[in-house]
Length: 411
Image (cartoon, helix red, strand yellow):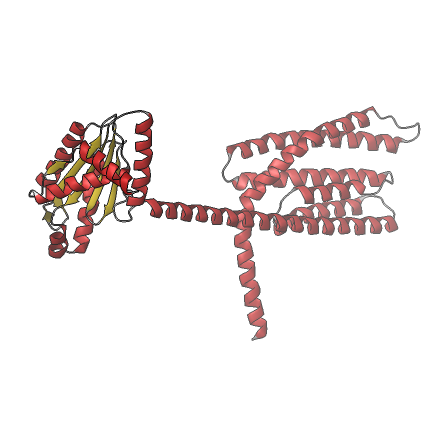
């Protein structure tokens, strides 16, 4: 039925709206308390000055009603100053505490709004008695509507109670029937207008907060995606080590630094022996697990300043700054020993793994490109493979220099 369908749509919209309002409720209360904290700096001196002025006021002889009005308004101003100061202190505590303001913050907001509206209503009643109208109630109601971020039902309750009290006091006052009807219409118009403004302020605020959060989440997602892309651009997805491209960049930077401040630089090229047999015998998932564990062993075996990368397949490479060839050879031999003496535990089985390692390096006075170093380490690795595997071989620095000169001639 069309009527039931429309009712269901309205109910869904109401539920969605409630969820949105629940999301911004805490921020709205804190925002209101912050606004009130600013208003207090202006309102307290203003109301204090008005209280002092009304206390000093002396009505003309025979105008006792005017004197009574001034004295009452003075005490109302004083009571409002006290209420504002107490509310400001409590509100500051809630704001500085951070997090969700909870029920306490909401109650404090209601107290602040009610205190100001009560002052506006009481002052307006006093003004009516001397023929000044209800302008005070109008101004206070508009101010509360603009400054206080209240949910529609909450603001309707606050303004409804204020109007009910004001209406009752008006009816109890000794006012001409015609003026009473006029004041009541003005009071009703004031409350309805204040309620409309309050709803508009709340709707605008909630839309802004939700949009800001959505933009924040989108921005965070974009940053996460950007970081992911940057990681994919420089990291091997299986092992998490640097990939070949990033390694070459870091190696070139390190060689440039070594040229400015002469120091030893060494390169280790590590190739797992008979890795194809591991894949064929244990399966590719086991092979991937082996590569991951070897990557962890490599990272654990070298220093934090060394650069470890997977350059493809079962081949790894390590750049060791400030390391002499003797130190690089010792590190390579230690790594070879760890791999050969400790089979890798893959859960259901233990897989023996060995590696052939090629080592090369530059002394403090030697210069060569990363391509030349890479070629020399590859030659040393080839020698280790050729000489029986599971061993360490090194390339003489002269070989690196010769390769560098050959590369220069070709260029």
